[in-house]
Image 1 (tube, helix red, strand yellow):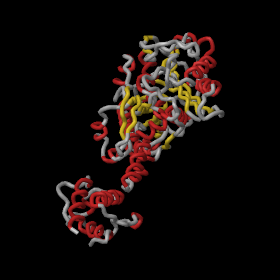
Image 2: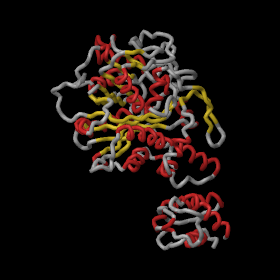
Image 3: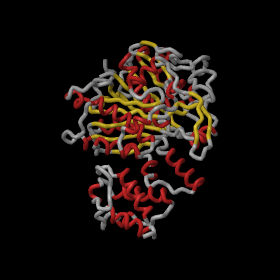
Image 4: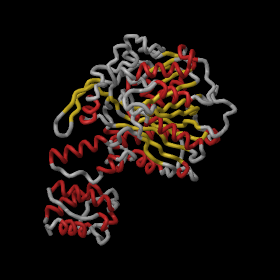
Length: 83
Length: 412
């Protein structure tokens, strides 16, 4: 769903304290300068913005298998059932 | 000249940094200048909740804090105002102290003790209104915003302080308890320094409504010790001190603002609302243990002085019981008429006020005083500041629930 992708890119841009320039699908998560809790906040903002629910458990470490922003976008799409 | 008995022994604790923020100032200098000039920071305002409902009451609310809040950085930018106020005041105190907590193990030897009466109550109110009125889910940071230890934790992270760190919550005595307990930690050798004080940020509709239902809020001005007093006015802000073991401060050539010469705390053990003379006097006497009392003319008491029917005569009697005949010669004032009642943070800003009086020899006035009350018959420095050398400054804090804390400051 393109809406999730554009919303996430915009919110990541606002929250990624370590990033210069705009994030893309190829941007490495490690370049964003965010911790795992920031992912919780980013997903909350996406939920608020799009009126969707993304069920996940932060104890499962949402960043563990993600290398790029594209991985995060796909995971959020998957978790929200809108992939 | 020091009021500490030369034979007392043990480690001594001094104040090497101060910070204050409230309706009457965003720096110690502004806060003090307004106090000396008797500037009243209270006015009737309409406070709106995020569902559009509102309450109109007198408050001592800060204006123009947002630009300063933005400078506090990302973590604090997302915190409740009670943490922001704490950090803003603490930044002033830490900068003024000149301490470098990264030097040696100072960070590990420094305590962070912060008082608050309620913590992140405004964050909780916003969350409940959003949830119950608009079916919005709470923000993921809600818990971290509202926990009463948030301010203490933010400060320990901000300055890298790894000694004992916790919040103290004893309603209107929280600030005095925090400063006194921090001083005791240094005195006992547990820590060598401390960032200690208190903050409060409950100017929101729900809290004000709850206070209003106690029927002790003034509907015009706060008039402590005046016969026509009509109650207290809620304020907001923070007062923070940097405390340090005396020999350490002296060795590094630090500017020493005052010595904490005594701290007394106890409980009335009687009633949730009505204060008790013997409890308040007991805490004052405990704070003055081991202190060589100067002549009454050189004693200043920054009173709890809430301007309520019950507090002011009770406190008057407690001061008389503590100081005996000398009570007729001392200077007393309640500065709450100017900066409002900062509740948990009262002991923080009022400690700063007491130390400034000690340093400058100026007694800040009790403003809005216009009718003597035979039940409050001390010299309460009505309406005008007065020049008078001070050798001992006593800051009284007496809380709902009968919890009393008194901090005494002297010169080194």
